[in-house]
Image 1 (cartoon, rainbow, N blue to C red):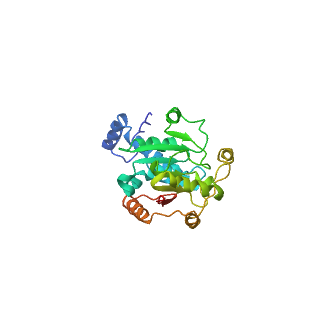
Image 2: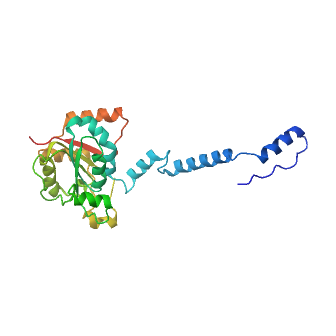
Image 3: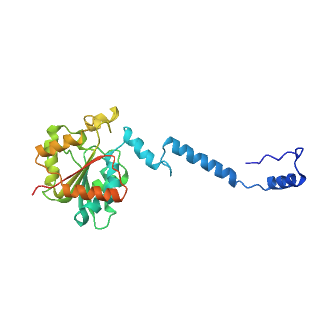
Amino acid sequence: MSRRQVGPTRRGESIIFSGFSHSKSKSSPLLPIGLVLLGAFFLVMYASGGSGLLGGRKDVVSRVEGDDFSCTSEVQRAIPILKKSYGETMKNILHVGPDSCSVVSNLLREEETEAFGMEPYDIEDANRNCKALVQTGIIRVVDIKFPLPYRANSFSHVIVSDALDYLSPKYLNKTLPELARVSSEGVVIFTGYPGQQRAKVAQLAKFGRPAKMRSSSWWTRFFTQTSLMENEDITHKFEQAASKMSYKPFCQIFHLSSPL
């Protein structure tokens, strides 16, 4: 960008100052202009709530308020907290929910961790890596309204997200006990708050029905009715670890004990 030439010395200005300004204009650096443009860029990013350096946290909040928020992305954030809470017992994990390929891929990067996934919906538009996980059997496309294709206690933990919200109580009565059956240490449920994550019209054919966001009191009553117990000890450990690591969940998280 060419700099505008400094005009003749105005009346009252010293010749020395004029000479100094003229010499500076010839070799004036672009750094001040760059700093101004960079500052303007950050201000725009902050105001628009983008995913930039200043907008990362705000982007999470905006997705919570919109239709695109998913508790599956919340699982990714919560993995270190879950590891801290459950300790060494969390070694063989089954994730159930959409975008399971992404969750499982991240879990497999954890040391001494085995991970598998169940995708309740079609994955025709999945990428090459996801299709490879399906071909190897690590990811299965399964209708979770029916008995799961695993033996009892096949996994230490089952993590489910963005799947139970689309089930009616009729099918929840069958699916939740199945999730508990295949886990030996517990089930972790990520579900939205009332008012969050409504399926768009284009997605209804895929999910079958709109998401039904239930309150924590509704879930607590439902767990009691289906003879499932919340693990209060793990819940306390999770809350402590979340506080220490400055983690604030944007989904409801329930920790269920596996049946004896």
